[in-house]
Image 1 (tube, rainbow, N blue to C red):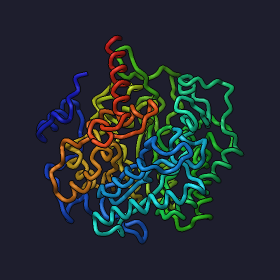
Image 2 (spheres, helix red, strand yellow):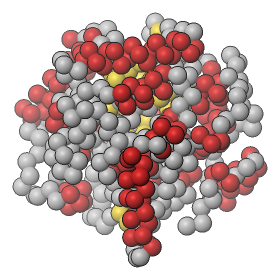
Image 3 (cartoon, rainbow, N blue to C red):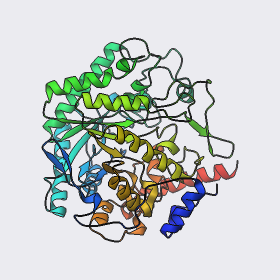
Length: 482
C-alpha cells in the first residue's frame, strides 16, 4: 500500500493535493472558527430542549464491565471523559444489552433492575463533571444505546459465539460455523425481545436518560432485521415487515415511557463481507451473482442504493423519532467501510482503499439522507481518520447543512476534550490525536479491555498493554511470514 499517513499532510494544500490524487472530494473550511459564532458551537432545538453545540460522542463498548453487566471504575472513567469532552450530545454513552444473552462480550453492560441505579449514578457523574467544566448542563442531551448483539453475541466467554439470528446468511454463517439447521429467531421470541427493549427503555427513563437509541447498525440484531428479505412471516420480506421490530418497540415505549425521546443509530447502507487476500489486503467474499443481504445495497454487494434508507428515514418521521445517527457497514465483516483506518486490528485486513475514500463515502451518504429529511437531527460518523483536519471538514459539513452534528468515537479515547479545544479556539494537541492504530479494537478482539494503549498514559501503563504488544508482534510476524 502506498497510502500516505494523514499526519504527513502538514498543510491544507498537502491535504487537497492528496485528495485530488485519490479523486476524492471532501467539504473543507480553511479557517476553523471558535467561540459563539462558530458553526460547530451553534445550538440545536429538539422539542423543548436545546443541544448546546454540534459535537456528539458516539457509544463504544469497553469490555470493562463486570461479568454480570455492572459498572466498573473503568466504565466510569470513560463516561467522565465523555462529560468533559465539550460535546453537548452524548449518543448512548455505551451499548447496553437489553438482556444477558444479547451481550457482544462477557463484560458488556446489561440493563436490569439491579443495574439501573448504577447507570443512573453513572449518568449523574458524567453530567456533574460536564457542569463543573462548562458551568451548565442544561443544554446537554444524554442517551443510552439499547442493543441485542444478534449473530455476534458472546455473553459468557470471549471465545464462544452464541448467536441469535434472524435468517441464515450463507457467508457469515460459514465464517463462524453456523449450521444450516441452526434455529432462527421465532416470531414469538421476537415479541418477547420487543418487550425486553421496552422494559430497558423504561429503566433508562427512570435512570434520568433523555433518550434511548434503538440500535439498528453494524450487523447487530436490529440491523439484521432490515436485510431479512428472505425471512418468511411478519418480521421479514417486505419493508413493512422488516421494520416491524422497530415499530413494535416504539409502540411499547410510547405506552410505557411517553416522555422519553427516541433515536436510531442506523447502518444506512452495507456491502459484501470482506476477507484477507493473499497479500493481507481485504477482498470481497465470493457469493451469488446477486447479493441479497445488504440493506441499502444495490445488489452487487459493492455499491449503495439509498432508496430503502430514505424510506426508513420517512418511517422515523412518521414514528416521531427525531434523532438518527448514520453509519454504514459493520466492524465485523467490512470494517474499512464502517470504520476507516490505516492500521487493521489483529483479526482484520489491510484496507483495500485509502481510508479517506471511506470517510468521504460516509459523509456523502449522510449528506444525501440529511437532504431528504431536513426535519430530523442527523448525526454523522466516520470522522476520526481525518485526524488533524477533522475540525476543518466537520465545520464545513455543518455549515453546509450536510449533517447537524459530528459524531466522534475512537478519537475520544485518546483525546476526549477535542470538541472543547475546537470550539474554544485552542490549537489541537497533535500528540493526542487518534492515528487509527486499532489497538482499541485489537484489545477486545483478544479478550482485553478497550482503550487507547498508544496515546493514553493510563492504558499504556496497564498490564494489558504488554499482553497487547505481544499479540501485535505475533500478528506482524505472521503477516511477514506469508
